[in-house]
Amino acid sequence: MFPWALRHLPGPHQEIFRYQEALQGFIRHEIIRYKLRTPEAPKNFISCYLTQITKAMDDPVSTFNEENLIQVVIDLFLGGIDTTATTLHWALIYMVQHRAVQEKVQQELDTVLGTAPVVCYEDRERLPYTRAVLHEVQRLSSVVAVGAVRKCVTSTRVHGYYISKGTIILPNLASVLYDPEFWETPRQFNPSHFLDKDGNFVVNEAFLPFSAGHRVCPGDQLARMELFLMFATLLRTFQFQLQDGSQGLRLEYIFGGTLQPQPQEICAVPRLSSPSPGPREPV
Ligand code: HEM
Image (spheres, rainbow, N blue to C red):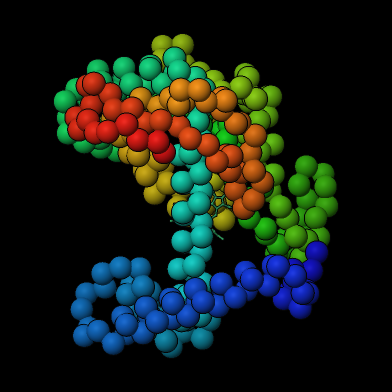
């Protein structure tokens, strides 16, 4: 209700503000480094943004300034690291839990990619099962179960409910990802949610792990690319399984900024057909 009050209340959360200041200082330092460089064609996000600040200097309503640049860089790192890594953790856990699914993905990868040295993002069109499995991982793990906190900019009505300007909104994305009207087995891992009867990949309009609308995740495409390339490469190279004598998988999540899996050991055993076999590694 009063997010600004947190700054003034004592408690362990004050540590977050200290880290935030350290992070801001680090990014400010990076910006100064770019500004001191001899002018060259903009190469990365910071240099492009700095160019934009200069271009928009005479625009009185421009939001391009260094304070915003710092915050945007922080947002990109915060939004982009934990989400993707956590989704991949869940992917490996589900592959261990559903051995037959793991084998079917590997079979598809072997058949379609053959001895190709690397997986490319374009390959997803020829890998409908792998793609469906990854979508199902994102649906069931629902890592951002509650989307970012938003504030209503104007009074409105949604499904008959009146929401006044200034109301703080928490979008419940999990409610869509588990909606029984859209998913045959909402609480079970089921790649068929994304396959038609002939095994072709199909989209489902309730697949909204990145949310929707004006403030949809801006890293959506990058995340899809990263997840596909890493998941396909990992499954092509390793067989994922529990260690001998393991107590079994721990499937309950830990609630934080994202829904994270419990810490646990899974073995990555090089596959005989993999392009670069290495030693047996716990992950
Ligand atoms: C599996 C991976 C990811 C998931 C599930 C995810 C999900 C989300 C969701 C649900 C939101 C809130 C959208 C809303 O409020 O309507 C969001 C916002 C955001 N995401 Fe992602 N995200 C992922 C990866 C990434 C990546 C790779 C980046 C950047 C490199 C990124 C950057 C951001 C940023 C900056 C925002 C805030 C946008 C704003 O405030 O307008 N995300 N993400």
